[in-house]
Amino acid sequence: MWSEPELQGHGMDIIVEDGLHTFASNISFLEGSLGRLRAGGFYIIEDISTSVLNRWVEVLESVYARRFPTYEFSLIALPKQLRSYADSNNLLIIHRGS
Figure 1: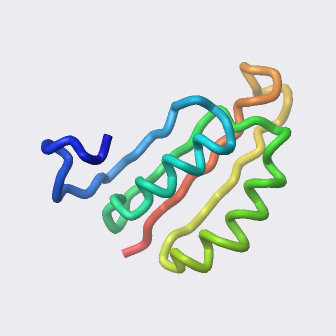
Figure 2: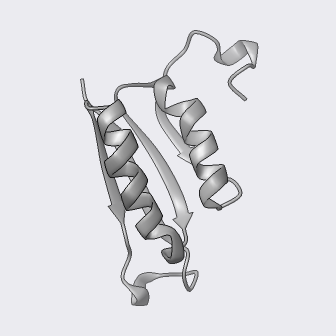
């Protein structure tokens, strides 16, 4: 996606990742996209499965928080009664500071 000429040289204010909904695909897109987020922008991954929340906590703390110290990572595990999809309606919201 990022090789498209229309996207070259432009940062993004908002990136919403609504892809394959697997940990591996989320990480792959995150790796290629996080650096394209403008200061003050938001990156959102939705429909994260509850079964991989611990993996997300681990990778956010051990890798991304260190590599991107000006970014705020908020993993939101939604209460069961609020979930429209039984086990996969959790969110990761990333805010890039100025």
